Image (cartoon, rainbow, N blue to C red; front, side, top):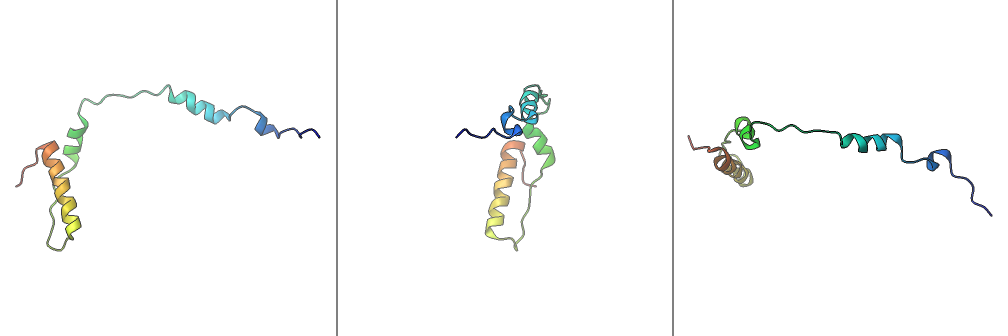
Length: 78
């Protein structure tokens, strides 16, 4: 017994949208920033302070954030 023919959509090549996405992705360009990424972050983020009501886990996260800021941005204790 021969197999019935496949429905029309299943016989076609991959959908046009998928092919276009693959082609257009190859055409994308990136631009280099004149400001290093870490300096952008240094301007956007500041040290965080904790209170006595914060949990030990929160204090540990704040200390980790501040240590990264000190290493990357030169934050000093005020």
